[in-house]
Image (tube, rainbow, N blue to C red; front, side, top):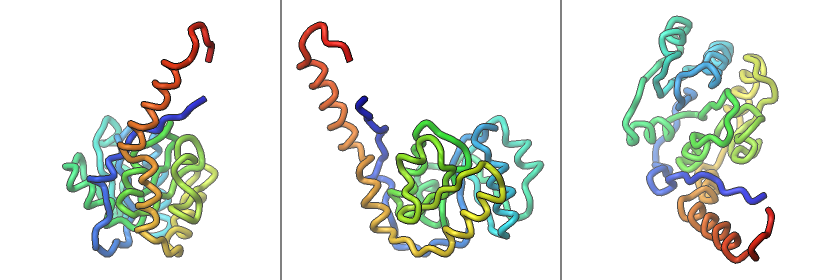
Length: 191
């Protein structure tokens, strides 16, 4: 099977000359399968601030369980989201995604991603190079990954360069190849 990755706007999302903070960031719809409470518990364990961008039906429940280290920011403009990416120590993806655009946007901004080692994160996060993967959806496993990502010196320019494989131009070219191959195949060819 040919895989055509969704596009990431690597023109808009790009690094800036800012010093990242000591906080972690989630950019997500606030729904249960995203496992945001897992990140809240892990950040509490390591004593790290967590900023959460997004809104959704789970917001009230998350607010009720949020400790003093958690800030729920709600919906933000694209420019504000880009700034949040750039200023985060790392972006956290505690749930399983089919692909997930957030890791691509974070990487385009030069920031590492801490992600559950399942689903689409395995297509975007290379452990030790542009982020850290954790194996089990448990607060202890994620807390260990947060500790680890904080100790690694990542190269923002290298992370951003790696995100270019998901650029819009790459997406368009891949679609053209797949469509061209399909149109050139003899009639009756089964894929």
